[in-house]
Each structure stands twice: as structure tokens, then as C-alpha cells.
Image 1 (cartoon, rainbow, N blue to C red):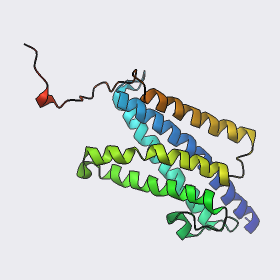
Image 2 (image 1 turned 90 degrees about the vertical axis):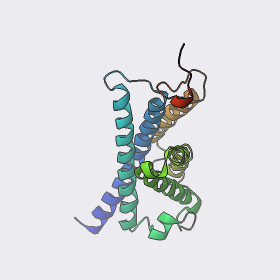
Image 3 (image 1 turned 180 degrees about the horizontal axis):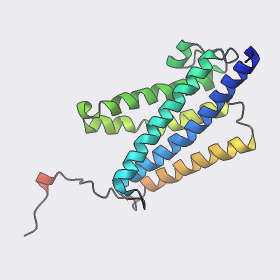
Image 4 (image 1 turned 45 degrees about the horizontal axis):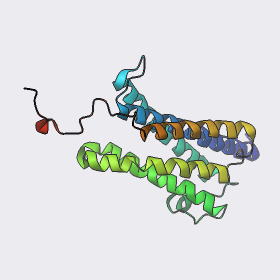
Length: 195
């Protein structure tokens, strides 16, 4: 494989993993909302929805790791390790790259807190999970601002579908029809027993 072929392969892999990660995270967000509602999906049940949500989230994290790693080795991208950690310091489209860096930083926080869920407690876990509603739009804007395929119809259709799905799920989450089935709003000790 020539140097030019390797560079193109790294670039293609980075583009693909970024786009697929957007879709995978969209699916994870929707399933997270569905899991929180307590509703079952036919064939999965409530437990299956939660497991699929976690699996998609971890898959998205893996895709982002590949996305960033390939860009670090791609001479055209000129991404440095500092650009991955500190937003808005990159040389190539620093604002749009910085949005991606912020999204990666938030992903790292959510993953660490999720892994330490039993040590940090449910309140911090829940508050940290709300960061997903910030990181997803940051990641989408990053892709639109830096992605070389952002202006192509097929890419716009894929990203638009992912965004529309997340927006619909979030809107449902904020309606009266959303209920957290199976989740007690009042601790069991404080509930009155029927007479």
C-alpha cells in the first residue's frame, strides 16, 4: 500500500466512523429515552431495551475512538493530541473542530460516570447523562462544519434522519404522554399502603 493509498484509507475510515457514530448515538439516545419511559419494545422487553441502549452507546464510543485515532495518524488532517483534549486550538477549522472536541470531552465524562455508576450514585449519574442532550448537537454541528461529505445529499439525508429521530424522541420525552412506567416517583417507604 502506498503512502497516498494509506492516507486515503485513513481519511475514508475517519469519515465513515464519524457518520456511523452519529447514527449509533442517535439510536442510543432514542433507546435511552424509551428505556426511561419503562415501555417495552416487542421482542426486546424492558431489559432488552436497556441493554441495547448500553451496547449502542459503547459502540458509539468505540467508533469515536477510531474516528479520532485515524485522524491523529492522517497527515492531511494534521490533528494533534492537544486538539483532541482542548477545544478551539486546532489549526483546521478551529471552531468546528472545537465543537467535536467538546463532544468527545463530554463523551469521556459520561462514560467514566457510567462506569462508576454504583460509586457515584444515581443522582450524579442522571445529571451527567443529561450531557448527552448537549453533546449530540455538538457532534452533529462538528460534522456539518468539518465533514467533507456534509454538503452531499446522501450524507445530509443520513444526518437529517438521525437528528429528526432524536428530536422526535426528545419532544416525546417532554410531553404529558411520556410516563416513567416502573419508576416510583415517591420512595416505597413513603407510599401509603391501601386500607
